[in-house]
Image 1: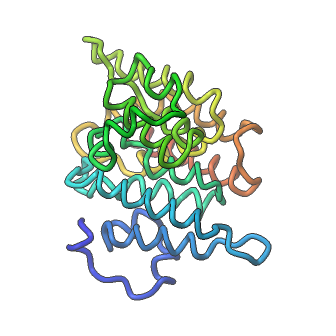
Image 2: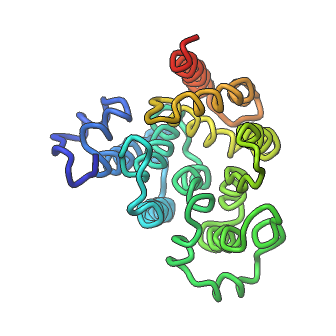
Length: 272
């Protein structure tokens, strides 16, 4: 359901109490955008706002980039695709207690480089990206990524910093170039194991992404996706429990609960 088609929510309290997927089911893209900002406004540490003005400006820019890059893109169930990264970011703040700006921005942008790097390059310019003096191998030089993907990562590094770009980089699955469709889930699993091992912040985003993707498995690919996600479930569980994954104790407990519920949903789809 698009934001334009959604019924109007009545108050912040209404959005803040609904499960995230109900927010998008009832109120569409506008609803989850507002829920994200309500969660940001609600967040406090030691009685003070957790995000300063420069951080809010960066988050606002990331939301705009996300909406622009995923414009016109739909998920399998017909929802506007941008509802997904916005739920991923909102879950980090509201459920897992993640206040790190780089991690939240990476959550919002986590699918942009993989799915539509050209959209990001429409925001910036190729020439300014190439001339940026601080880029380094890994953003313009990953041989597993396309030229546009590497340039998009460089643009993220220029606009939000190298740490944020490194998180998005770790979350970007290289294109599968094999001919055997049965090897595609293995390609995904190998990427998850390799890329996230050395990037704790990316693990947090991936756990929220995994939870969101398995919340409902819609369309004709239910069985394929359920098997794909079950294949990485043990890895997700280890990442959630890993003490180097930077969760609060409460956030870690909730992430473990979400990962286990995701496994149950996949098993239900497969009739196990």
